[in-house]
Image 1 (cartoon, rainbow, N blue to C red):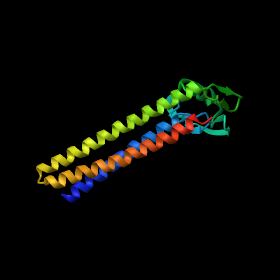
Image 2: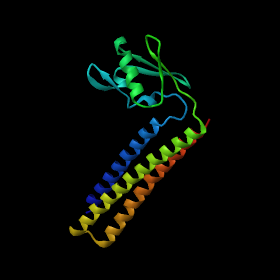
Image 3: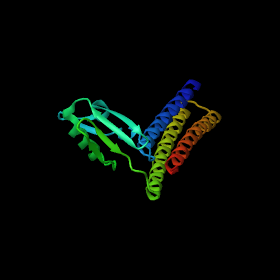
Image 4: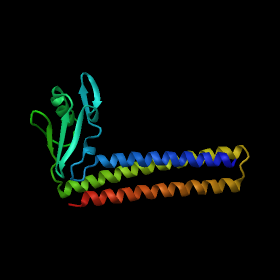
Amino acid sequence: MVEDLNMIYDELKSANGKTIEHLETALLKIRAGKASPAMLHGVMVDYYGSPTPLQQVANVNTLDGRTLTVQPWEKPMLMEVMRGIVNANLGLAPQDNGEMLIISVPSLTEDRRKDLVKKAKAEAEHAKVGMRNNRKDAIDMIKSLKDDGLSEDLQKDAEGEVQTITNTSSKKIDDLLIVKEKDIMTI
């Protein structure tokens, strides 16, 4: 029984870890006014007929805190890369200089910052919903062990451990949100 419970705890920790990783990735995509190559993650480019991630067809760098450069590995791909960035609806307007794209990242207005904070909070809430689903799955697995002879005391202890793991992961989500909120609101 103890091995089964430890396996349930490990699965819960793993699932919560994946949820937190997903949140970190989602928060990276929310720009905080500073140029970052991560802003272009998720941009797909039509590479000779097949959709391909931008990072597989071009180098993405930052010149300074407000400027990104995108240099395709093949010069004919310049227009496709530009089209992919525009179609990604990121609110960025790439400039073509013949060899690379230069993207000026505009500074954020107060209203836009508040919208981005709302978006970050929504992402954090989605992560917490995922975490609650993970907790429910773990508790259901513990309840199924009760049919296999798990005592009520062990079941209550196991449910308490599941709640402790969930609380720890939920605290990590809150901490990530606080850091991102501070980053967004800093001018």
